[in-house]
Length: 137
Ligand SMILES: Nc1ncnc2c1ncn2[C@@H]1O[C@H](COP(=O)(O)OP(=O)(O)O)[C@@H](O)[C@H]1O
Ligand SMILES: [Mg+2]
Image (cartoon, rainbow, N blue to C red; front, side, top):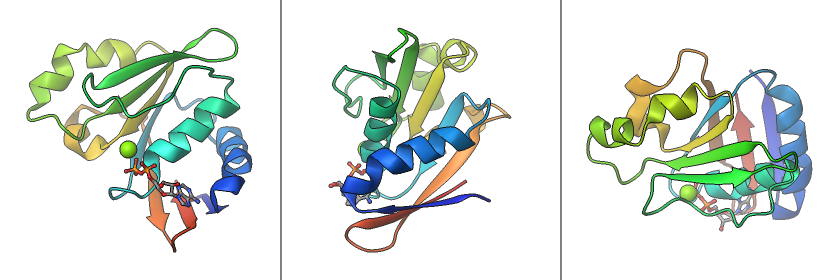
C-alpha cells in the first residue's frame, strides 16, 4: 500500500506529481471515496500535472470527458454516479476506452465494478478533516 497525504488544496500539485510517480504502467485508475471526498478535485490536479489545458469537470451528462495532455495524448475522465444499468456504460464503448492505452480516470467505479479491467489501479480517498485527504493505493 502506498499512502499520499494531501495537506490542503494548495498541496494538490505536489500530491498529483507524487501520485503520477507511483502509478507505473497503470492506465485505468479508479477513485473510491464518498461524495465530496475529493475525487474530481484530485483528478483536476492530476490533469494539470499532465499538462491538460481543457477545463476539467465531472462529466455529469455524458459519463466521459475527453481531454488532451501536454503531449496531445487523450485522457479520459469518467463519472458513473448516475448510471442505472451496466449497459449504459457498455453503450459508450467502455472497453474501447479501457483498452486504448490512454489514461482513464474513473469516479464512482463501484457502479461498474464488474466491468473494471483486471489491472485497474484502485485508489481510496479518505477524508481526514476539512482540508486533509489521504490517498491509499
Ligand atoms: N486536500 C484536499 N484534497 C481534495 N479536496 C479537498 C482537499 N481539501 C479540501 N478539499 C475540498 O473538498 C471538496 C471535494 O469535492 P469534489 O472533488 O467535488 O469531491 P468528489 O468528486 O469526491 O465528490 C472540494 O470542495 C475541495 O476544495
Ligand atoms: Mg466528483
